[in-house]
Length: 520
Image (cartoon, rainbow, N blue to C red; front, side, top):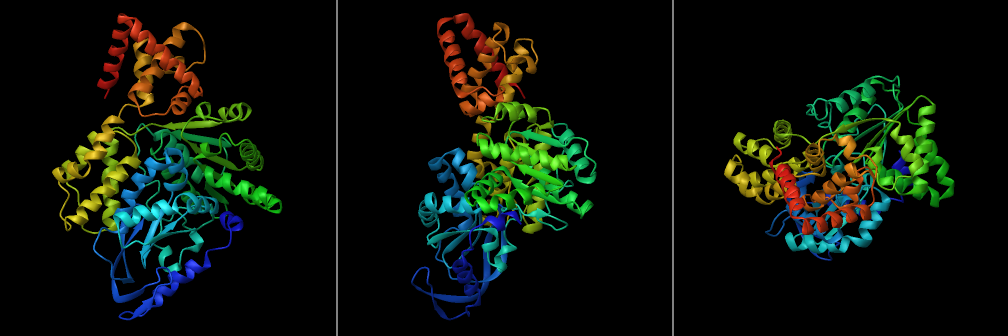
C-alpha cells in the first residue's frame, strides 16, 4: 500500500479516543477529555453519519445533542463558505476531497486524502472549519482530520470507499459498488470512452500503451476509471492494478524525495503495476520533477507490457503548465473526450442516482416531474446532479419522509437552478457557435496561427468566453489549445475596443451572442 508506506504515524490518540467512546456504558456520566465536560450517555440511538454525500444511519452509542441542524447539513453549508474564502483551486485540491464520516462526542470526524493534505488542512482550514461548524451546528465543538487507516474500525465501513491513499487493487473491492460499468449511463457523448475502458479492463493485451480520457469536471471520468479498476481486478486477479490521483502521485513522490531512502521504494511500488490508473492527471502539470518522474514511470510500465490510463480536465494540447517535450509525447497517446451530458442523459443519471439513494435510505422518493424539471434546467455535469439530489434528500428528511414534489424541488434547488442557468453556456459552446458563424471547423478555430482569417474569430471566441461563461482566463486559454492568460486578456481587450469603435462590428458580436444563448 503506497499511501501507508509514506504516511506519518497514525494519530493513535484520536483513534483511541473514538474507540474508547464506543465502550462507554449508557446512562452514566463520563468525562470528555476533548471538551473537559461531563457527558451523559443515553443508550443506543440512531446517529446519522455522512458518507460520500449520502446520509446513512448506524446504531451507535451517542450523547444527547442540543437542538440544531445535524453535522452533515452544517458541513454542506460550511463548504460553500470555505469555497468563497479559500478560492476554487485550494478548495478543489484540499477541501473538496474531505469526507465527513461521523460526529462523535461533539467532534466532527473527517477523512483526509493524504498526510500532506491532512497537515495543510490542520494548518490553514481547521480553525475556520471549526468556527463554521459551530455556527451552523452548535453541538459540534471541534473537528478532526484522519487518514483512512486512522479511522476507527467501527466507523470505517461508513466512510466513502474511494481509495484515498492509493492502495493497489488486487482482487479485492476498494471502490464503491455503485461505480461500475453497469451503473455508468452512456450515450453518444461518452460511448467511445466507455468502450475503450471496457476493452482495457477485460483484455490484458495492450493495443495502445497510454490512454488519456478527458472532459470538463464532473462528466464521469472518475466513475469510468473506478469501474475499469474494479473490473480489471475481477477479470484477472493476478493483474497488478494501481489507481491513484495526480495529487496523490505528486504528494507521495515529493514526500519520498525528502526521505531519499524512500524514493527508490516509491518508484518500485508504482512501476510494479501492470495497469496504472491516474485520475486528475492535470494536478501534476507544472511540477517539472514530478512530471518527469510520471513520464519515466509510464515508460517503465509500458516497456514491461503494462497499460497506463490517465484522466484529465483537458486534452494533451490543453494541459496548462505541461513541459512541451512531455506534451508532445502525450499528444502521441490514444485519447477520448467525454462531452457534457444532454437532457435525456441527465434524466437517466438522475433516475439511477435516485435508485442508489433508495437502497441506502428506503422510502426516499422524488416525483417524476421534479426529475424532468431538474434534467431540463440543470445544464452541467453529473456532479451537479449529485449535489441536487443530496439537497433533495435533505428536503425529504426535513419533510418527514414525504415524496419530494415538483414545487418542493424547485424551492429547495432555487439557487442551484439559478446557478445552472448561468453556467449553461460553456467555452465549448462559444467555440462551436463562433466556428459555425465564420464557416470554419472547430479544429480550424483552435489552430495556432496568426492568419487574420483565423486569429480574429479566435479572438472573438475568447472575448465571448470571457463575457458569457464563468471560466477563468487560464482555463479559457487551455480550452483554446494552451494559450496563457495574457493572450486571452489581450484578445478580450482588443475585441472590446473594436466593439466600442465600430457599430457594425458591435452588431456582429451581438448576433453571435444571441446565437449562443439560443443554442440548445
